[in-house]
Length: 114
Ligand SMILES: CC(C)(COP(=O)(O)OP(=O)(O)OC[C@H]1O[C@@H](n2cnc3c(N)ncnc32)[C@H](O)[C@@H]1OP(=O)(O)O)[C@@H](O)C(=O)NCCC(=O)NCCS
Image (cartoon, rainbow, N blue to C red):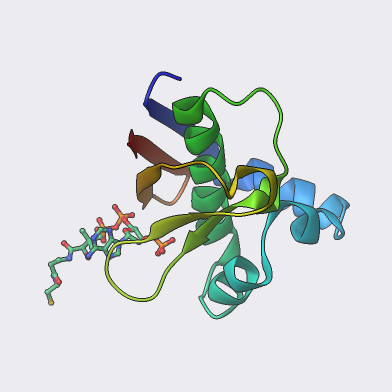
């Protein structure tokens, strides 16, 4: 476990993948993540940032395989937070995350606190 993880993604890449395979959204994102994005003007921007967050958390935790929805970005106003589910739920860690997006790119950084 490195304790820190970073990931970037071109938003159009995710938008194109979701357009090609509509079932992908439910495999990658929780109901809450999809509802959050759907309520905004460009959902792909927010989904891309959350995809990056999951990759960043996986790097920070040193995961080699994981279920995408077991890493959830919860946004309830202010800074988003990470909630771990399923096989990751019993890890005794707190993971901090920060998201960003421009028109073209989304990114996230994650840090593990024990
Ligand atoms: C929160 C803030 C830093 C976001 O910066 P930004 O350049 O607009 O946007 P970024 O693309 O870098 O970041 C967006 C992400 O920041 C996250 N974010 C939102 N509020 C946050 C907060 N208080 N702390 C940390 N992260 C926050 C969100 O998750 C958002 O992603 P999402 O929309 O997909 O959920 C910015 O709005 C800010 O400076 N707010 C404080 C000052 C303020 O309120 N200014 C407005 C006065 S009118």
